[in-house]
Amino acid sequence: MAKKKPDVTMHSHGQYDGWDRESKELPNLLKITTEIKTDLDVEFGYILRIRNARNSKITFCIDHPPFMDSTGKPAAPFEGELYVKTNDFRFFLGDTIWLPIEDKRGEWHLTTWIDGKKVASKTLNLT
Image (cartoon, rainbow, N blue to C red; front, side, top):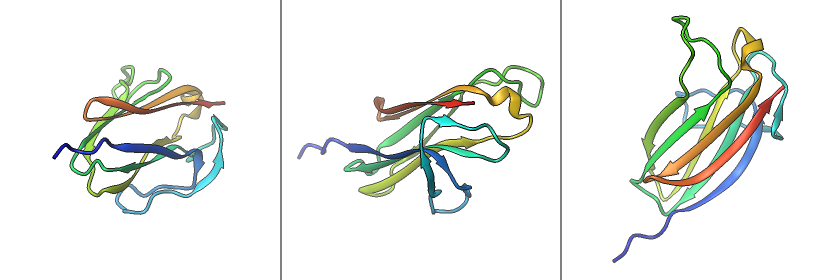
């Protein structure tokens, strides 16, 4: 029997309340927007609802404006992977603003793939 094609919808995007990466709970949406005011500790990104993709591999990338990492070198895009745990899975891809905030302004490109196929992309502008 052929595996069902994953069904991916963008549930929301924009500004969220704080997110605890150790918790199973996703952040709560504060405002649907692509323009994010750059303030300390503001959480932004998107939430995907993914169905029919259990055990599939999610890869993601957050390409951000140029800023320096802790060693003083330009920070590379944030990349990662995880596996879909259930047949009705919710996934948050985003970040929060930290000091210094000035170098976080600009376009942040968020992209998600499932098993190598692009399923979501959003550009958020931090102003």
